[in-house]
Image 1 (cartoon, rainbow, N blue to C red):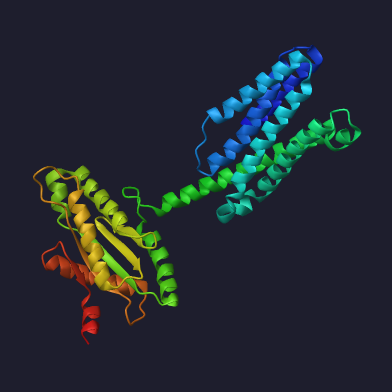
Image 2 (cartoon, rainbow, N blue to C red):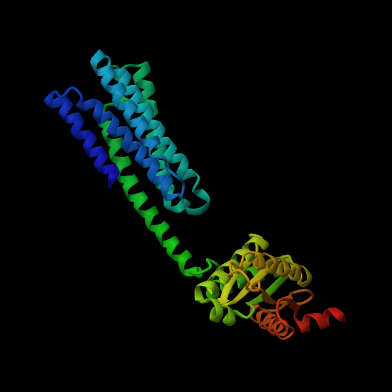
Length: 350
């Protein structure tokens, strides 16, 4: 919508210059055209989640306006047109490059916009070169870059940009909503449903690849006592501290989710039970340092139940049940520890 308004404003300024003889109007129109082209780049970049500095839009527009006014007073408007086309072509070309960077994630949504912006950028830069080399009165220049062709290119760009960016924006919002639906609001970790779905797929992939997988169930110790003694805000702080500790101790290939209340589930790829115990100990060490409980309160801790897929093939739900059983053993043994499931330990002993 903003780009359409800018192009309309530019057309108004050009009309004032041609029909009403307003001397400054075409120069302002040039600045608005450059700003509109820059907004195409800014819109694409923003949708990709990359920062846009407003000064990068304002400075080229101001420069185009200044150059246009200077060359208008001197009588050589060709230089102003060359500068205008160079800036417009560069801005639209940068938008095309931003779109080509999206090929890995959402190419099906941006393909038409990427092609259209690339063609338009090539056209404007070619028109700039033709204007500089051939001149505006040359017959070949008029054939290739006349007013009719230029107007057609502007209309194509406007239609494709408007429709494609709207579609891309809708897709981005849909992806954001899906991501929110998959995450626990307090911790930002996967929620139970999403963890289960992703863990089932990851477990199958690991089994197919011959990779060991460890399943860890964790539960914060004495969590009700923390809530009763220090309030629910303190309890929420401990939960967030535990989730942060998990992120710091785990790799990007691992999965962790809030399974319910103060209970968490983890899937560790390429890790056996012994290594999972060491990871659990690191999580507890980080949690004790960053639990944000009031001074004088004992450090927050967690208990862990661990199983792995060594020398066996088991489904996710069975592994979770075994890890949950090991977690109850850790609680019964005094908390603040990791216990490997008895079924797995007995197999290892044989």
